[in-house]
Amino acid sequence: VDLSVGGVGRVGSADGVKVYLGEQTRAANFAGDNDDDDELDELEFRDGRGGTDASLLSLATLAALQRLQLCNWSNITESGLISFFKALPRTRLLAPRPKSNVLKGGVKRLYVSCLPSLSPMRDIRADIKIMAPELCELNLSACRQAVTDKAMAVFSRRMQGVTVLQLYGCYKLTDNAVFSLSDPDLRLKRLNVSGCYKVADKTIHHCLLTTHHDLLLFQSPNRFVEGAAKK
Image (cartoon, rainbow, N blue to C red):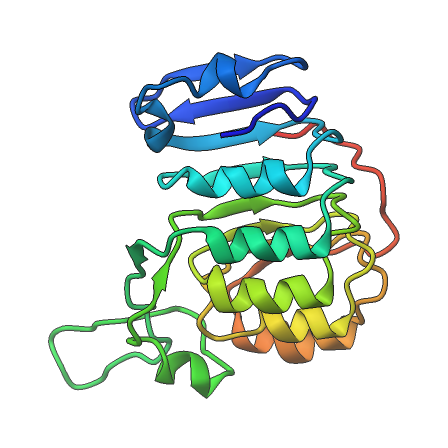
């Protein structure tokens, strides 16, 4: 795994151990010949401006990776991000999505939701078996060159298991990206599109929130600088 990206990273593993990576960290200092890489489930780079497409692609070898933060990876490209999505192994069978309709007349009430669904396709495809990567949280904030409508189209087809997606300041995105993220197979629960000023409010409400009616959305089109510290 190539972690020589010039940023500060926090690596978590399945047993809870965390390792802090300094600015000059090299792959040899971390990867070695052990099998710990396969157990990594969390990786955060606070400032990875030295990250390249090759660095990103190498992260796809972390089969257990669940949370990945790549804030401000300004050197990665659209094609590099798409290659990363396609390279991640699809090893997780997603659980059936709870249906929004309340079953009446029976003792058991399966798939109950407090909110009605406005998209029949979401309920129709609720029980479809989908294989997805282990990744469930992805932060691509300020990765402006890589995060495009085309990349989001591939994301929607390959990364259905992601529940938290941060696209803060990715101003290249347009309504077409919202259409892709409205795919009923996606398990999105939290989405941040602040700073994506080309995305229209009506597209958000009429398309995205119609499908993902229970989505927690962060949207402030004119904000480009994150004021609060990252959690």
